[in-house]
Image (tube, rainbow, N blue to C red; front, side):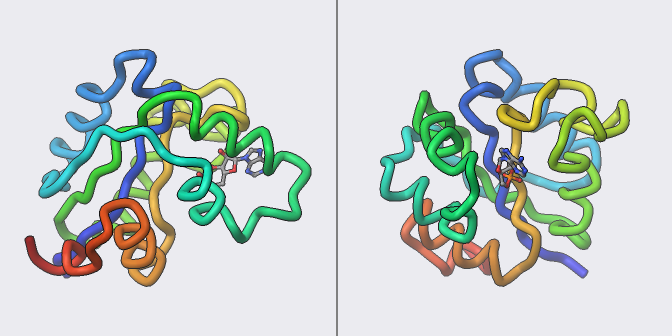
Length: 141
Ligand code: CMP
């Protein structure tokens, strides 16, 4: 089924010049970018995005990382976009991510794991509203 998924190339990915390479992998998989913004996250947005992790010991470090430079946030469209995006990026911990996945090829530590992808359509909808201020983007531009 055709879906839209929400992706964030995190500050380390942007800093290292990986936007083109990563977008290319989504395009080759048949996931077409339909909207994107290069933007600096406020602390408030980052804390809201990761609100479910606020009790974790790494929370403050995670917020500092996500606000350390611009992120490239995008919506991609294609068949089973949420599940396909998550298999392209690989497991959260780059140490465990197989070669061939984005985190497996470009990440080296869980603290800076290059990329985020929403784990469900519901979360994609919430994250799109938070990042772009428009839920409608999940369905149609
Ligand atoms: P992400 O998929 O964006 O979702 C939660 C983020 O928390 C994760 O990627 C990592 O960037 C970050 N994180 C940092 N340390 C840990 C940890 N020990 N376990 C899980 N996530 C972590």
